[in-house]
Image 1 (cartoon, rainbow over the protein chains, first blue to last red):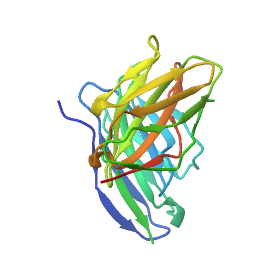
Image 2 (spheres, each protein chain N blue to C red):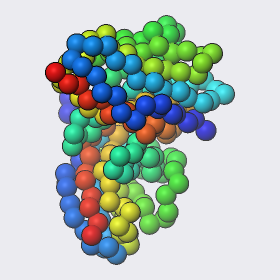
Image 3 (cartoon, rainbow over the protein chains, first blue to last red):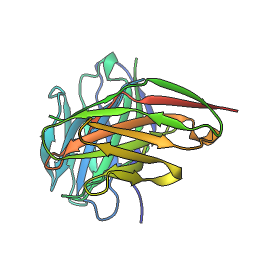
Length: 112
Length: 113
């Protein structure tokens, strides 16, 4: 059974650019959630995808968008990057109705 | 909406001593509570969870937590820590019908020899 995998592990972008982060969910999981963890803080919920549809959204602007594919993998896209977008982005997968979320290793995004 | 507060930002502790990390939650509905550990440059690993039933929950690596509804607390404990327990610990919660986890700000545990 493979766990949640994210790519890339690190990347550096310039302010104003766009970025795409990727997540492969754990085998058997159909729900993917994305979280942003700024340095020294707890993770903050961005949104969740279930059956290729956005299932809930946190307090993030529309330039944060996502996709879920038929194999349940997911992408997080961020447009018009700002310096404050620098953070660890965590993906978590779960089964719909399941109690537990399993997290990937995260992608460390640095915006300069 | 569910909110979670971790009362200690940093906890230094000597090896083989006990440790307690405090977490309070606020919710008027049935709540699920979790403790996660994060090692440097890694993701989150689940230590234990409370869904219902027994208020004393045992997790991995010798950790346990007690759900206290009257005090709206879910404190994490370990009777004897190791150097390898040095990490960031996060308390998280969600309503039983909710889809998102709300996390506390984290507690940094530093174990010294």
